[in-house]
Length: 291
Length: 309
Image 1 (cartoon, each protein chain N blue to C red):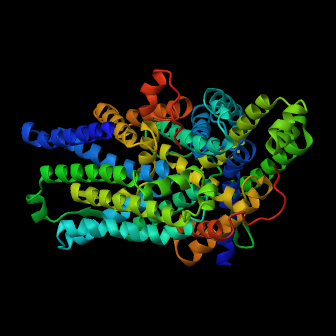
Image 2 (image 1 turned 30 degrees about the vertical axis):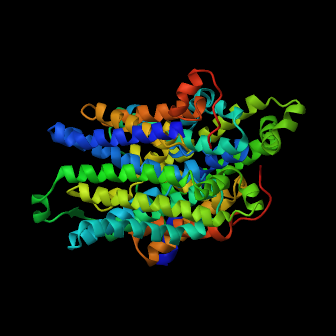
């Protein structure tokens, strides 16, 4: 029974990891950008959620639409100010340059957050924080149930957007072959802009959930790290496998906590990750890439 | 050869100048700052060997820096003569690079970068759990603490790595490493053993990072054991290298000077502004000056420089 309880916590964490990784995977699959500042952007969003709660008492789950708008605007600005310049680079150096630039952004965001909000750890405490539903002796935290629900909603919504709408189809076409897409009359520049902003705003639900755990300027890199691990586990650009990969990683971690103990939580996942990287670099999850 | 001679004279002149500083100027502040500068020159040049000359974006430097620091500190404190201890630190970093490098070098491009990052995090978590406390040096060591000795050691190390990079990359070995960076397939096609040269670059870089870690352990009287394993020791040298100019000798030196100067300029206000500014400089350099700051004069004169990396 105990291990089942651990597994439930693992799945909840895994759902959150999945939401964190979606944006990274999108930007990588569509534009070949590796945006390691994603975690820091999520933390910025989490601060947004925190202040919305503190000042106006907005519930973190309800703040998600507002966060999406804020992150969308940040994404547009970032793209126009920084990332759009990278398009003139060759595809191969685009990756390295985007990596370095997002290193720079990491430094900027992290230190901006320290200057604005100090390095203290904060968290939103709602009236349902820490409350659990008891089902057959298993404790299911309400926030955790909300996290899993959100993850499913986000993944389904993204899937519908990419497969059913004009913009989504344009994004997929551009990801496959931007030159051909341009010849077919797709506005590639605008598609890149939208997909980059999408890769940022899709982090809003993750930001809201993280604001109910713990936020501090320095933890962005930890979330980026989870995101990167998932991008590789799922197979680069394979968006449909991000959530399964996240749940898998969450379970691995939970089992390792059960067996080895909490101090090594982050390690088991990373060790699995390194093994996958070495022996199965195309990712654990076979199947056609979504992009 | 004329320019080579000029470079050599400039190099020797700088070394002499820095060597004279402790004799001419009294006061610890400048020596502390310059120590930091030399330390950054060493780790930035090591990362330059990897990414600038070898084309390998190693984000795991922190693991090697930390290993060098840990081994040096533990052996030194337990009574081994320091020079032996720091060499042990350097070689254990090389051993780690062999252990990690052999499998990880099979990865290419971003896989290598992310893989080495993961290893650095694994090392950081493991050390944080195994050695949760603060490392102090024994009292009798504090009594004999000499800043000037540490200063000269750092100066020596940074001069040594510059000299070695110069010698290596003007030799057959260096050309082979460069060829794996520029076009792996072509190099392989004409019979260059890519794997061997990548391992060589990795080992050379790790050796100096390990020594730099040893210097860190020698310099600080007390620090948390996990501090030299912190991810910033991976990120900062890479950023410094690219801001200055990857694949050049002057680049990482220039980058380190800018980095340490910014750090010191804002040290007494809010320590973090310097890193924020450095981040912005980095972004601007990557976008508009891909050759780094060293290519600025060339760019201003309107000449198109040789593409770097």
